[in-house]
Length: 410
Ligand SMILES: [Zn+2]
Image 1: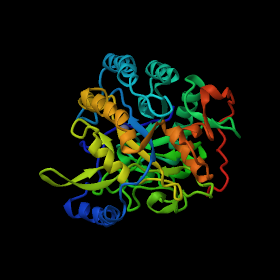
Image 2: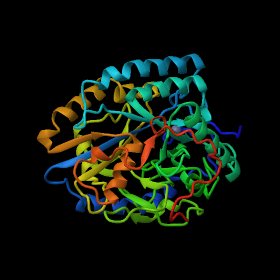
Image 3: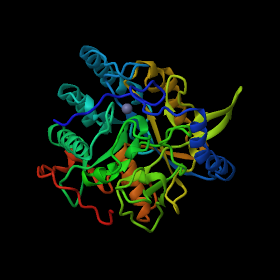
Image 4: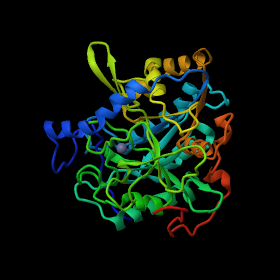
């Protein structure tokens, strides 16, 4: 089995940081990002009239997480307890409040490759097959030593195949039986974008493409992080060759009338600066945490980011993120703050001229692709537009070690 390394998320002390950026360096990073955010704040406004909100929550789902300590691992019995509690509690929390299509609020469980455990994954897969979410791929690697392209490729293929063939997770497109997946990079260091920390593989996005990844949902992080690019609040194809370091730093926006051909697509969540109470500036990056619980006030910011396929402005895509297994975040993902938000979100949608669609990462991308193909009407009709759930597709194709051939990829 190829090796993977342990995790530490942004905002916590990393296990290893070769050149920890200083204040001036962080300002330099921010100077790339903040002008664009200010311009968007001046030019992007809340939409008028009825809008469809397609909402997905990318859960960096790490049963072994120990709050505040990226090196530590919770005991296995604690991981089992956390997962069992989650799977039994979650349906009770979300069941009362469904979206326009009669669907409950779902998580997409981006499960860390390096924390794979057959028993835990089986329990989570059962939870998902019952309709409460979907499993996708998360990876922390390149710590303490830079990863290699070969090891990365083997890890992704092995994990992808376990998820699909053993657990019935992930998806496939109609034209091929190879498992397809969405991805979130640990520590935000996608395609070696953090100065060598937490990755080490410049050509990572080419490897993602070769192994069946159709969308990356890592971004945003924050303006002071080296991985954050100047292009924000966008859905796009990478502008640089996928073999280059951080090829997502520029790209071509998705738009109606042009079917994208370069995968993985970059699906960003909202990133904005806002005034808030006594703080002059507050960063909004779509995270659910103990300190930043979801609220209707934040919903306004997410809408104002206006992340959409060009030419389909009334379909707004809101990709949020959280760490559902972190006990310190419980109020934001399972507790009273989340329950209040969900109730207010659903009950007040009509009065706010919103039509809600709770989606998995896969469903969100399918709806995005439908918009690119010029589809209109109810976005909820396109949840399975291209990528179907593996378990429901009936696919048993096993010869999945060959690179996925995607028309138009570079
Ligand atoms: Zn993570």
